[in-house]
Length: 155
Image 1 (cartoon, helix red, strand yellow):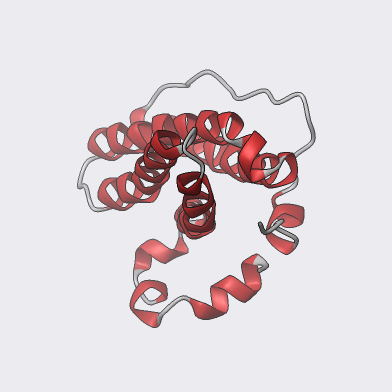
Image 2 (cartoon, rainbow, N blue to C red):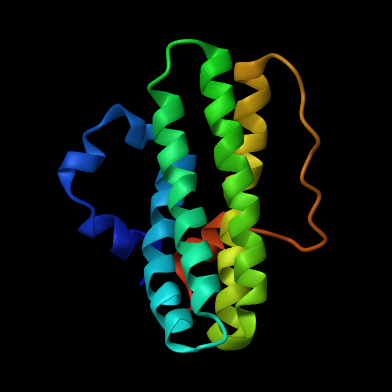
């Protein structure tokens, strides 16, 4: 399923909310939906049952903290919750890397790149809200969000 196909399935109760205008939130919700299949596959292997639980909690925390931060009044409060989301996105990347043997390298790398896009967006948003700069994410590979959204590998 591509990002556009997935987007067509999102109910108006979500898309009509002003929060939906934030690209980072849309990507985080997309990542959460993609993770559902991944979590189910990881839960079937006795070696990765606990990893599936950690992955599900971490990926859910990304969009949840963005939504919570968006609802805060002050920039500092927003930034704090966006920082939590940043931590969860980085944690999720780690869980995907560990699950790559069960999920497949292609699926894991797709999810890792999607999460890297989310991290980059958060690294742009947080300093604006907080008022100071954070360390930059410097990947060693080329990441194009458009490529990720058009052709996500499916299990």
